[in-house]
Image (cartoon, rainbow, N blue to C red):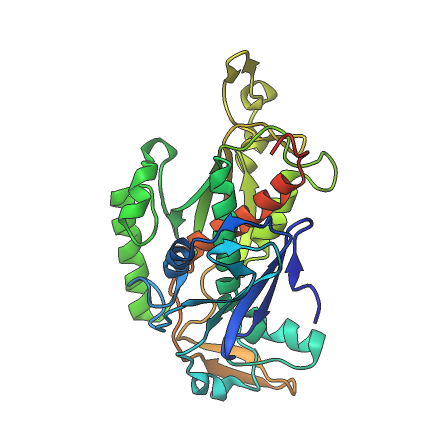
Length: 353
């Protein structure tokens, strides 16, 4: 299996499976002699770890980062940086009953048809557990970007039909609830919905918005490597993502040019319908995008499917699963964004960065 790496100047390669010994990442191309803040990286890991909030899976993992190479005396050396997280709380027996059947909504069917073999324990390589490696790499990327004055923050703005009105957003509020929702009252409604569905054995989807601040003008290229195209690639590579939009996104389709254009002045842009990018190149404004996540496909309902021998069957999925992916996906969205932005930033002329 190929395609486990991402990036151009700065690359990441992730490895490991959901129920294997460990998952990890190798980062290559990093500038050396840079401070390695293990405490910050661990704090980012804690944001997505199983058992880290009451709205997610009951699986408990410490997700403690171990550095195998690329750091000396608390500084990144510039050689390949290798980090792993050991899996300590797997319950592989939960998957023994569905080893020969494909779970609806999962990658089981396509994975098996393509490779002829699959690890049924939690999805193996296609499990959300793989995002551990992405968060670790994203945390390192954030360390570099913070030095450049670039910040990346994401928030849950919709769960099911419960939406945060754009006129009632308090971005500071996101750190006060487990959903990272920028509206306290909506966060309570969302939490109640998720918990109700958990008790029913069902799940729900949602939308995460990400804001990238402090970008210089000039990141991205006008053809295939548009900044929004690279971000879309990175974000849509996260499991369970089903939609990506930047700026006004799909709402722009109902606007007139006179409404959608961002007029400019000597003091800067007068609006930001474009979401911080024009012609695939960053404008220097806040870069704003949203991503839709589907409901967690692992639910406790009896569902029709087929076996590897192409026979009809009915399965009921057991195990420990998130009733909603969004609470733990917020930091993953930030991480993949940071990886893209750092890679683009490293491609700027030296005098620019």
